[in-house]
Structure formats: C-alpha cells, structure tokens
Length: 318
Image (tube, rainbow, N blue to C red):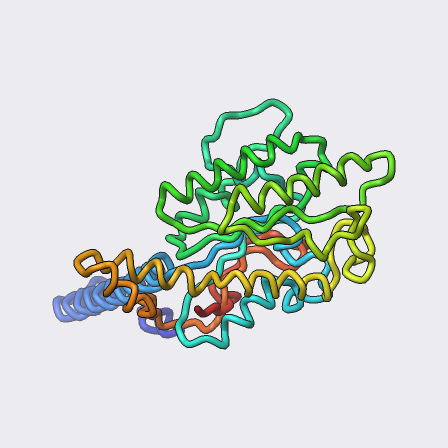
C-alpha cells in the first residue's frame, strides 16, 4: 500500500514546465532510491536467514515410514517427534532435519549420481545422503524399515547400500548412526523374510558398531513378528508405545554427548590428548535459535510431502 501510494503520480496531459519536470525527476529518483534500499535490506535479511540455517549444526534423520512418524497417532508421539521434544530440554540449540519418506528403500537414500540399477529405485536428491550432507550436519541417524525385503531385494543389497551411505558420511567427517531393521509380519508363506530381517538386524548391530541402535530386540516376538502390544495393527508399523520404545533406545545411544566430545577434541589440535579429553565437555555448537522450532520437511505420515517453509521449523537442542 505504501509503495502504491508513493508511486502514484497525478496524470498530466500538457507539456511539462521546467519546474514540473524537475519535481517529477526528483520524485522518480527518490522512488528509485527507496526501491533500491528496500531491495538491499530484503536481500541482506534473506542472506542472513539463509546463511544462519545453512551453517547451523543439524541432526539429520534419513529413513522411511517409521522415522516419518507412521503408526503413531500424532507426530509428537513418533520416536523422532519425541526425540525432538526431549532434546528441547537441553541448553544448546541445534536443528533437526527429518528427511524420512513413507515407502522408501535403501536405494532412495544413496548418494546422488549413483549408478542406475535396473528395476531398482534411483536416489531421491531431496531425501538422500547427499542432501543430508548439504545441511552440514553434526550427526545423521538412519532408520530404514523392511521395505527392501518386502519388495524382494536381497539382504546383501540392503547392507551394501547402507555401507555406501556410511562411507559417504565418513568421508565428509560426519558421524552417522544406524537403527537396525525392524520386524514385519510377513505371512507364513514368506516366513523366510522374517528370518532374513532378524539376520540383518543382528549383522547391523555388529557392522555399524558402536553407532548401531537396536530396533529389533524386544520389538519382535519369538516368531520374528512385531509384538502385538507394540504394533499399530497393520503388521508393518509400531503404535505409540512402540515408538516410545524406539525413542528410549535412541536416547540411550547418547548421540549428543558423543558428537559434542568428538567435536571438542577435533577442534583442539594444538593441545595434548589429555587436555583435550579434559576439555571434551566443551560444546562449540552454541547456536542461537531465532525461529524457535525444528525442521521437518515432510508433513506427518507422508500425507503431504510438499516441502515446508520456515514457519514449520521446529527446534531441536543438544
């Protein structure tokens, strides 16, 4: 309204006098100046917000439906939602970026430009390890459920893909945690798939130690199905209690403490190992959170996968 009012010049049909011409030119010059100033301030504000978000230390979650919150009645009851709320009780601020998408497999989170494999999904460039690293994260958590096995992919493919993701994160110097595969109620005719899931969970605990989180033990029954008390009723996902169980396991992994200690030592190259260990409680990540919320790019349960704006950012702290 201000600009429209300011720019409105009364119509004039006759020839401009010298004084009228001078007055009009001054008005036009002033308007241009104010427009330039407005654009300058807008640009500066945009750059500051963009730089703040890009450089803020982030915890990224890669995964599929469980990490996206499916099975829980509300996102705050899902393990990622609970974890964000738990972290909010701490003092220092960081951001969490949840890139999990319903139905995704280990192929979807592979690095961008990975070799194309026939009859296999291609990496999702907005939800894969490459995208996660663009956020300059302090740490990454991977929670892929049993979609690979459900689609008929071999367990070896699943582990190989996760190995690739781990190698890319390691090359970038970013610590990464892997939640083991979870049980799924395959039919008796597919009972071998339940056995495959158990074997994969056991192998993951060893393969990614000490950065593996057990999402199998106490979640599966003796037949390698989901415990009825923890299931959401579809044979695939967990209910609120099941998500609470997963949340407790992620908390027990002490990811914030591990990241803080390794960061303190990594950024103290000029002191002895003994002094670095003594100072390892110092956390260099003291980010002021201006927006007060944590970042989740997917709407709850994948009902709307449209990218959200800054207004939906949700705070997470370490």
